[in-house]
Length: 518
Ligand code: ATP
Image (cartoon, rainbow, N blue to C red):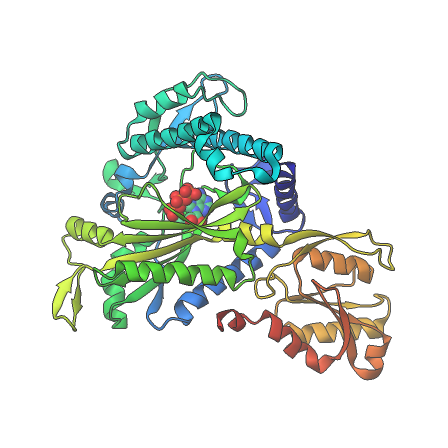
């Protein structure tokens, strides 16, 4: 258990130390669940967004982009169901004054039942050795059967209560299961109540409810209300999609785990408008397409999995998460939702404006169905950082640098910097001038860095830690024959190449286009 937690601690410390992520307003002791992206963070985040945008918009002739405003007419959120149904069940501990999501506390108890059953199975496995029939044991051992039944029953009761908005039912479960505050052990709970996750603010010129504005909790609604504008101005025919990247805001009750759950975050969402009746086909298509997008980055397939939703949101007829194995376990990274015609139909009703498509093939008007793909940019960032950060044993180098290195093995297309140029000696004017010249040429093509602030070994380590795929060293031979040493981040292999070959070598590795091929 301790290893993933340590890895997570290391990851968050690394993000700060190397200028990827800072706590918001840190000098005032921070603002909880709000983060700022530092110089390397913003580069990595922009690359993630570029990869997503290009794969959606540039690679699909039938997907176009949009950048809708964060503020929208308040009726938008009534129509979408967010005013009435975008709630989480909240419970406070009266002693610790800590606030929790009731469903998450109950899920914790379910996990404990499952863990207990697994422990029994593991013990039996050891006891019986080769003759152990695991299936039979799971089905017949009274303790295992009881634990698993408790897990299933609790899960069913929780889902039933969530579906019916039965807060008292959730409270009763917490009491029955004797769930204690994870931090203090107290069982002194308030009643469970619903808490709306939308932030709101007020227009300056209209008082009261009328002037109440929401900070959007998802970018999707900006797409729905613009559906006809976009369709008409781009003359798209169904099926077609609208893609958008933008900020979203949720007043999360429990916001821990660094940038996994934030109150201000960024989403990359695409709504794909289709003919009713074709939703299963397109749902399957986007499930596979999105998984492929993740795998193209070289992410180990074992770290990604689909997880079907048990409790469908009010707008969906099917929904699946792509989960990623974060340092704290498998969690949702992206959602793929079959949203039916719910959103467009509700906007039609409340706005009294038709949001229909005229199908030239069937000669009929209808409200399209929608398949949505929705991924949090920040969660993708965390997934990529968590996946990439490795502590490796390496031999001590000639500068006496330690025998381990922290290296960020990001896909080179995502790396914040693509190259760094360093002179072998910073006091040799000839080397410095030449190195700066090489840097100035390469920076026309890629983001990079000139650095002469330390020994080569130290500079290599620093670039490893921020994931720079190539380090270029300029030495005395360079002045003679225009060749340099280029060192590759992951293998640490060095080769001598001519300066004129550098741009091509770097481009071959960092160019995003290779992610789209195949
Ligand atoms: P969760 O169950 O983790 O709260 P969700 O199902 O509410 O997520 P969606 O409404 O489907 O999430 O949002 C789509 C994506 O937006 C998620 O897959 C996730 O990557 C991202 N996301 C949602 N909430 C947050 C948040 N508070 N902080 C960071 N990213 C988020």
